[in-house]
Amino acid sequence: MAAGLMLSKNQTISRFMNFNRAGPFMSAISLHLDQGLAILTLSAPGRKNALDQDDWKALRVAIAEVAQGPARALLLRGVGGDFCAGFDLSGIRPGETDAFEVIDGLVNPALQALRALPIPTLAAVEGSCVGGGLGLAAACDLMVLSETARLGAPYAAIGFLCDAGLHVFLRETLGYQRAAWLIFTGKLLQAGEAFACGLGSVVLPGEGFAAATEAQAHALAAGPDMALRLSKQILRTARSPEEGLLAEALGQARIFNSSDAAEGGAAFLAGRPPRFEGR
Image (cartoon, rainbow, N blue to C red; front, side, top):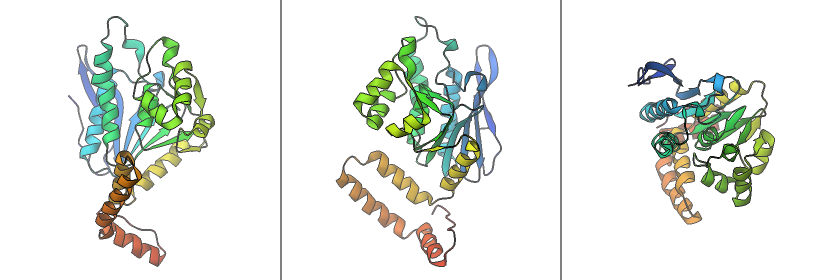
């Protein structure tokens, strides 16, 4: 079961309560809604925010709550100077653990739910961002990197197969050769190296990173909600220039008569910041 799931305007942080055979405990996932921005925080600094099986369950529940709530953007971040070190392997026993059940039953649904959110999503990546952590960041629309970030898929170092959707993501983002090199060698990229390869949206200084990324996420939440949602849909689904052109024309026809479009035009002519309401 989960406690305190319903999000309302400016709700304070809620933590997701899960139960296993040993009894109740608090997960490492917390969710907070602040002025239209859903802030999803990974809070296990002692293990660089690596997520265990119950955390992946709670993460999926939290993302579902965001999808059903009033949020207009999502910020995904970690605490303690790290984003996410992937899957917590301390409870995994090769030969005993059902790997398919764990990956396809826990990890994949959370990643798919994150990718399916219709609102803009931003991953604030600092410190360790590896394995499933990189998969989480990659499932977001924007991956903002701190100069302290280290990214990679070091599965081969422990004899595991790369997962969390990284085969396809890295191939599409970096090209086959670079993706194969990262997966086969398990090399970690520094933020500048990753950005130079096309991995990440922007690199920001480590000092003040949390405040800067939260400000960017708030700006997304205050943006023209309908237009941003349609842009995300086109970016995710259009497979050819022709599909993109048609989707843009149809979408613009919907947006053109919206209140946000009227407000944007009026604000531009008046030389003032727009106040979008998402309609």
